[in-house]
Amino acid sequence: MVKYGLDYTRCRWILPLLLGIGVIFGIIALAGRGWLESQTLPYVHRASLWESCTRSDEDGQWNCESLMGYAWGRAAAATYLVGFILLVICFALAIIAFAIDTLRFNFIRGIGGLLFVAAVFSIMGLVIYPVKFSTEIPLQGINMFSWAYGFGWTTAIMEICLGFFFCCLPNYEDQILGNVKPTYFYSSP
Image 1 (spheres, rainbow, N blue to C red):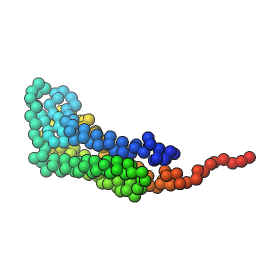
Image 2: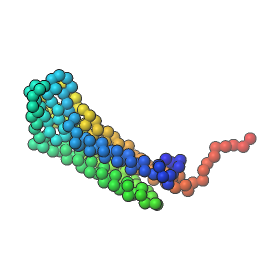
Image 3: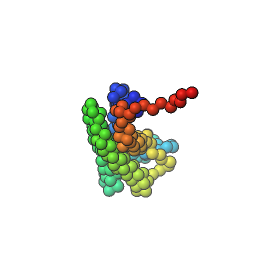
Image 4: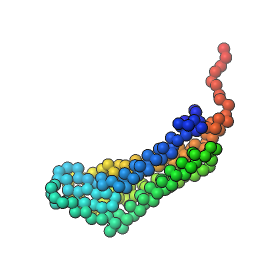
């Protein structure tokens, strides 16, 4: 990306594309029912960010209880949701920043800072959920935090990594815009 510069059309949209993938992963984490699942027989428990469902036996009906009745459930959902909203705002700002012909590198650094704030909120929600869930909700058998919870952590890790990319990109402004004379490591005989 640095070799060809951000004017190279295919490389220019890599960072907004990665942010878009992070938004998709965040939607999967918010909507997914696989935050916690029973790992072994009988499969009697599953939970999402919003509710916890149990059943008496493997063929029984699921009985769901909202986690919004607990203060920690509201806190986990609110902090993760704030992090997701900040991620969507960063995605929109990145589309705007990279669509302009002349890049505003200070604007890009601001997006990186906002991504770090989004990561902090997301991680707070991802830590509150398992700690309080495992202490306040009775669990039977062996349970595991599953695929949707993993998508939540993937979103948080992407926010951190993309925050570094957006913050460090302005340091290479001259190389990206082609204002630096190339250095050749060649010595004549």
